[in-house]
Image (cartoon, rainbow, N blue to C red; front, side):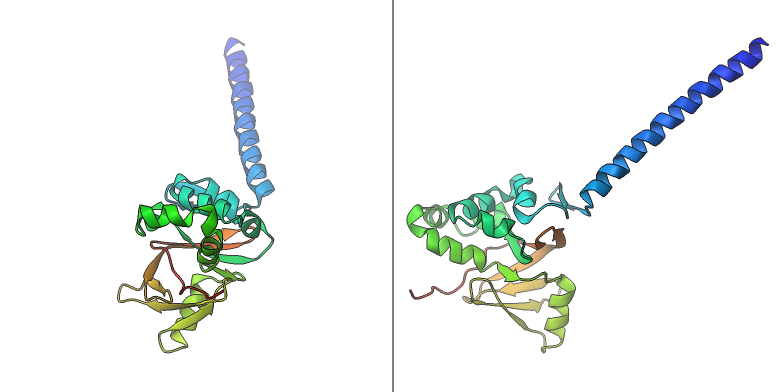
Length: 202
């Protein structure tokens, strides 16, 4: 009788524990489903496809300069808009390559137009995946041209290491190092250098 009681007590507790674990699993699954998000790790930070561009870059300290630049250029609503937008996002290391003096100057209120022009030069209208970029390069004799939201041209090629290299109007090069990061309002490809268009006459 005593053995039966111990077995019964043990079975009940195992059942409760199993039910709790199952409940936790259901809650986790429900949370993911609620966000309907695909997760991509970028520089150690999770970016969710259910977030917009601003929400995702805000989550990573690696993109603090980019976020500050977007705010200074008053483009936050643009990158939170429905889009879709393809954004070639430079991280802090990319911005630091242009030099602190030039960066500080760009962030001044008097240079808001130039900063806006620079940032929108990193964006395309629509959702353009790396596969689409590669396909366009391969079908155009190894070089593809894209018109950015800024209205200026950006060239894409594939280098000997099979990296997609973006070439700006001044001949500056930037490699896509993380790609196809889905956003609720588009897609992000991160780049390792800031792209600079030719100065636009006003």
